[in-house]
Length: 329
Image 1 (cartoon, one colour):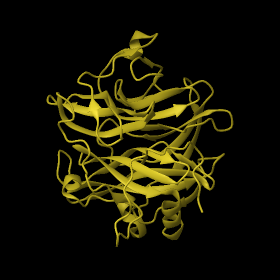
Image 2 (cartoon, helix red, strand yellow):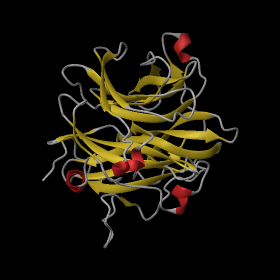
Image 3 (cartoon, one colour):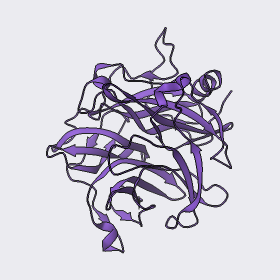
Image 4 (spheres, one colour):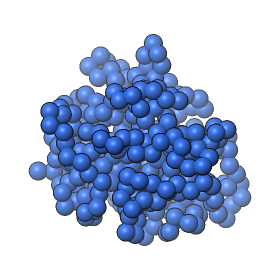
């Protein structure tokens, strides 16, 4: 039986698997949990990150405004389902005013690492790059140096050092909607200077797994298990009607996470419900966060739906890793 290495979370949002469900992830019956009007200024709320915090949960949310300005906002919840999202974006402090210049901010991740919460996001600085900041209380945020040169997206930290180094997944990109994309991993001694870049995985061009043929990118913070790092990712196919985003999973080596032990042949979740197929960008499920309970193996995946609203899907480490081993490349 696959086991999560981590903390207990007895109040993790949860719903049992519906009878007859054949997929390894199943949607919350109350989806979407956050509508497009999640705060007073939003046109849409999606691709957001949440973590356990104090006696409930906190997170950083992508809210595109009614002027379609992309920024990130703090949210809080008692149960992980009902959220109160602030009406003003995160205000960063930092030593270097050049780094604090804002063009746009979107698709955040939040990772508890050592003694603080690190936030990474797609940060506009003469093109998309990876912004990095930390907070202790979700009130004051200290921005660090951008991790990489443009162009890069989907910066996702591992929740502990690997071989004594901070470790981050990312997907190098271009300045547009990027009709390509591989996943890489990079390491740093100090969360400022990043190197030791290693390739993790590429899109699969063959018909055997065409749903991930255009690009792939990392999703939530990788989940440490006794069998490896469980990485949930997005895969994209280009169709006659544009991009379609689906979810996959992979198992990475614990000490050399550029080594893929297992990888999805079949997707684990795809746009199916109306709120996933219809919206500002149709046919998108985009995972950005996962809560875990080590005692039960339960996993709650938060994902953006059609670039408009936010949903949750559930699984367990045992079920997802078992499915991955049965349906792998």
